Length: 537
Image (cartoon, rainbow, N blue to C red; front, side):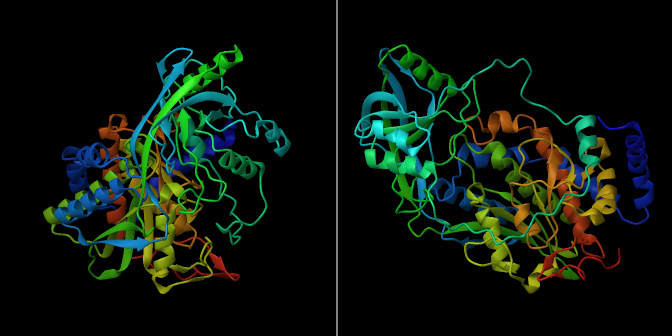
């Protein structure tokens, strides 16, 4: 709990901020009224989301469905009136994957259907296969010896049981005043060291690698796990494992793999503990695709006027995992950013006012496997980054032309404010812009960093990159990467609110005399942002 004295000081500071910033930062109320009209009263965000999920979901990177979704998005953006709509290639990513059929059943000692999902990039089976289940219990390489020659024709489990408890409270939550105050009260985050991290194998074998090499040599029918979270039939699933690196690599030696609902996984183990021989059947049909291994980001623009060489970017990742239709992760973000662009186009049409800076929408692919789409875009346009690495060696001229990048990727929840990513200089600017939407419950600024999504690619090369604070709803507990990630879990009111606020942020960024101020960013001991974003503040 916060001490009373700092809390009082903080509240006084927050209350004083509107008075301190009103004269400094212009808010165009006439434009905001039009943005509200098109965003809140005439929203199309849920229809966009339905196309991306019901019709073109899921959108696994490299899959044929992602290609179809990309084609639809390009056509939609052109129809909306966006300019310079095009795809930008990046890669190689590796092979794609498509699921064509899956079913799993317990066949002995009694029959019951199993709730399970194959892992992405898992190979298929040779038609329907059946066999006994064996629990592999091994903590080190020596433990594997007793299983040698005994796994072929078996289904292998190597997770133990996971306790399941009843929910006595709903999993969905909103931020309350206490949680928002904690964020607002957060201090400046400690900068991360900028080592030249690389995706290359640095040598050495962990026990996991040894285990998977052993399994691949033994050739069981399939390897099954139960995930570290999820219950009540919710199954969180991601990609298959290989002892030879990424599953997307064409040379990777792969076994069929699936994740079971924890209740069914636990039941199998409990039956085995009672001396029951549990047998399963599995029929899995998959197909590898994307032979050239290349992928694409979707780019579209609203041209600027007197400052058209400078850019304001908004974006979200377009790809998803495969068990649901990729609704909260991240058709929500992509739909909001497409809708924000539509709102701006309608506002421009009705007001006759055009943006000063060019507004650029980006929908990224490959985010789920490591921010590949956005990182490659940044490397192509803004920084010189060694192949296989993440850290810039030098910056390109275009890096100084990007005022800000705004990202959305935390589910369906409404926008409650902004993670400033340690950039205290933007606080008075964002405060003025948020105050215009206090009635929509968006009023929190935090210096805190947040990670795991595409704004990091921009922040990592010194461009102001921001992720919006969102209500968590049931994102991590029910939908994120799970079979429940479907359109029904989207909130139309929340997404309309988000698109409206983001459209206003993008517009006001485009219209400012000066670019968004930048925090310090050093290469070779020199601050690369010292002369960027500071004019006319």
